[in-house]
Image (tube, rainbow, N blue to C red; front, top):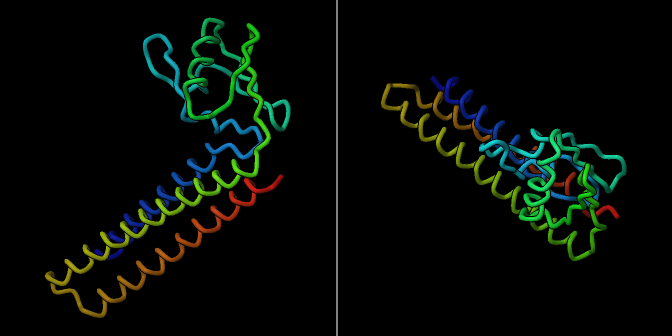
Length: 184
């Protein structure tokens, strides 16, 4: 029973870590990264789809992204979607492709990005701790099913170790992203 609780909790913690990585990938750090466009969606034949599904994204230079739509009429829609997004990049439409030039980050922008990185990290840590709390509540509920006190204690200790491990992974991911953002 405790094994099932631990397994489900670990799966949730892995998803939380994967979600954090995805959030960090969407931040612009002064270099072109196709994941920056992950949250941008366009209307395509009546459906709302991610930009990646309506064109090819390439990175010819470190600070430039080119979106080549599979259908020419999508150029305007992609351009509008990028302008409406929180990306803060002005798309250049030349009639066949959309060019996105990633601007150099100012010191102030870098500091704001680091604050955003820390915010994402704190949200992930809160989620991990919440998963631990829920698992510990389930483990304690097993006491009513005549589970030995030392087994319950061992289960809680293992949950704490797992939580500490995931918090360290989050800290490592945050540290890497902060260095990337602050590198000029």
